[in-house]
Length: 445
Image (cartoon, rainbow, N blue to C red; front, side, top):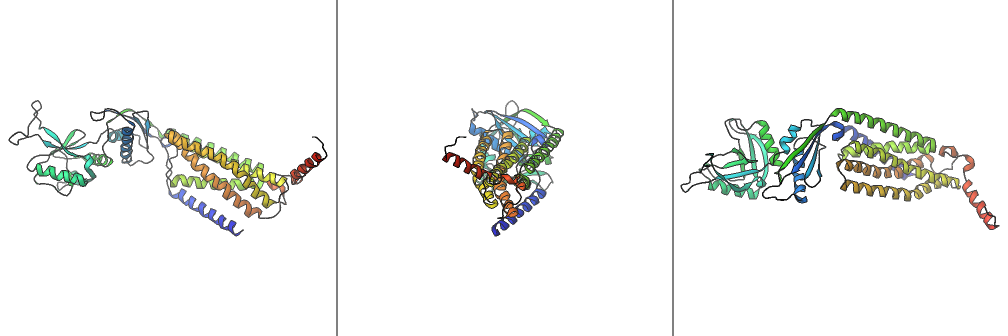
């Protein structure tokens, strides 16, 4: 009994911790519940990348995910669609132009040196008369970090910090270009062409932008975000975009709440009517299950979508299913004449195999759906998977502990508490004994 009391207080502590988590951590809602932007990107080949391979798409997806995170929006989703497309879903962002500005750029940072004639003078293009440049062996891939800053004139700047290899390249390049200009290109556009007065060591540089005004705050921040996220392995083109309004999401939430309340209410009512006091205990365990599960969703940052809510409600049904198996087995043990304590233990022990088998098959299905399904299916699979794990804990640990604490080791004085009639107790044993007696004397049924 001492162990049961300790376990009871452990359960109480878990519930208190879960309630604290629910009250202090925000709920992450998906695009279909809060509205937002949905953008379809298509990867494009280049001179250096003639074919879009799975490896290219994986690297593109990683780079796009980093960029989307720079928007400061959580619960974003970037999923591959087909061989060369990515579906980007950004909850809470209804201005697709904001997303386009950061998703559509390749973010290629290039350093170029002038094309010089025999006299060391920079050549110009015969048609446009613009200075001619040639790429140097230094790109954005050599960067370690990028940050916002301002110079003495109060202009916005982008501070660059190169990695070890990049710092050496930058030092060698500036040594070679002392007294000459060096151009800095971003996505094929010249943004600065300063004259190098002296070699620059230490692996740090500062870009102030072209013209008298330099960068605007938005331009500087966008450039820093893109440089931090890294360049895309191939260009991506936005081929489709649309928004999901928050009104639709609010209506979906209201309908989901109503459906969940009705469903859970009917389950609670059924358990009390069918199993009386054990059913009430199961309902309390079900409430504890819901609190723990919702806390885990918040703790692990699970994004709740309509499909995810469906998985949550379905897992509640499976949690009740485990209790039904246990209680039915317990009632069978009571009918066979076992005492209450033995019947409860046998009910849990004998029902465990069926509970484990049925839940294990569902867990395997969840794993398959998560790794092979789309983002919507993944949300359903994840919530259902976590729900089943928690349901096993509540059905086997919470319900069993409460049953032992309430009924103790005594006899069943009031069979009605288990939904049984007094004359049913021990009837199964009498029936089996009668069958054996009839068989002894060759009496056929």
